[in-house]
Image (cartoon, rainbow, N blue to C red; front, side):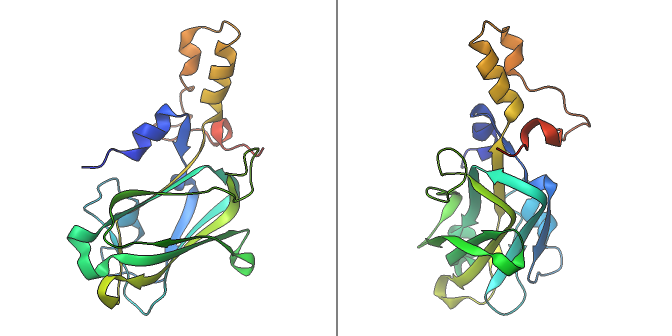
Amino acid sequence: MDPDPTRAASALGLKEIGNLASWTVSSFKPGCGVAALRHEDTSLFWQSDGPQPHYLNIHFTRLVSIVSLQIFLDFEADESYTPTRISLLAGTGHHDLIPFQKLSFEQPRGWIHVALEDVGGGEDGQTLKAFLLQLQILENHQNGKDTHVRGVRLYARNEAVSRGIEELGHSAPQQQLRPPAPSSPGWPSESQWMEEH
C-alpha cells in the first residue's frame, strides 16, 4: 500500500486544494465520475465512456500556485484501462492552455509525483500558476479505449504553517507551528494558504 500523499504533504507545510476547484471530465460511466475520482478510497476511479483523448479539467475561480501534483494509477487492477501517455496543460482558460508535462508509463501502480521543474512560477521556478489544469489521456495500455484514473491531488503551500515556522526563528512558542482552526469543519480557510506570491 502506498503512503497517503496528503499526510506527507502536510508534514512539508502543503495543503491539498482540489476541493476549491470545479472538476469536469470529457465522459464517464455512471457511478465512475468526478465523485469517485475525488474520493480518498483509491479502489474507486473515474472511468471514461467515449472516444480518445479523454479529458479531466480542474478549474479554479482564482489563480492558484500548485507546488505538487500527484496522480494515482493501478495497472494491476486496471490493465488495458491504464493510461500509458498523459499530457498535462495549464492556463487561465481553455483558450490559452499550454502543455507543461508529458508522462509515459509501462505498468504504473500507486501515487505518481508529477515533476514541476521549470514550469516558471514562484521564486524557484517550480510552482505552477494557473486557473485551469487539464489532464489529457492520450493512450491506454494495449490500446484500450476507455481509461481509469484513481486519484489526482494538487497541493499549494500552507501559508499559515510557513508563517509559524518563520516566527519560530524569532522565539515563537511551539504551538504556532500548528495551522489556525479552519473557518468551517473539515475545510481550510482559503486566505490562509491560497495567497498569490
